[in-house]
Amino acid sequence: MTDLNQIDLQALSAGKKRVWDNFVVASTPLINSVIRRTLASYRLSEDDVLDAAQDVYVRLCANEFRLLKTYDPSRASLATWLAVVARSAAVDYARRRRQPTSALDDVPEAALAVEDKHVEKLKIPEGLLTERQTLILKCLYDEERDVAEVAQLLKVDAQTIRSTHHKALMRLREHFQEEKPSKEGG
Image 1 (cartoon, rainbow, N blue to C red):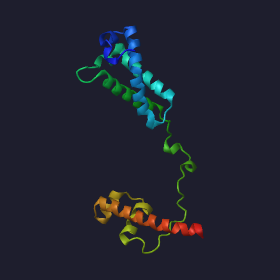
Image 2 (image 1 turned 90 degrees about the horizontal axis):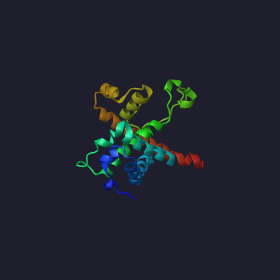
Image 3 (image 1 turned 90 degrees about the vertical axis):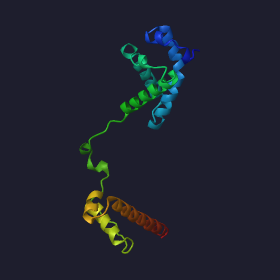
């Protein structure tokens, strides 16, 4: 078995078949390993790993080995350089494999699970939230304003709006989680 460090790069980039075959045998474990790790988060199959590895070899020999000829041994080892090329090819492969998406306007409203505006609003017990928290929730949700608009309206920093919003949601979660067991048990 040939070691990557023993590959004659000039003969390889010149397209010598025997050197190329030795290179493929020597580099396949490294390239497959890098691609497998890179594609793990994309949940693609072993066939996808092999296809992405094939992409690496196609890249390396395309345009008369143009990419391979860019390798500079003074900057990195061949193994390191191949790992970078393999990772790049794997990411490109995964991006091409993404599921096709539809424009939001083309999706039926029922499929979006959009909340009906006529649904009864959540009843928040009086005194649970401060006046400021109630006002901020009203502006953000009922009036559908963004944080910057609410901050400008109340003449406060946007971070104050975000913080107050967060505290209000925490109070609501805490309140309704405490209420939940008594409903299930009753």
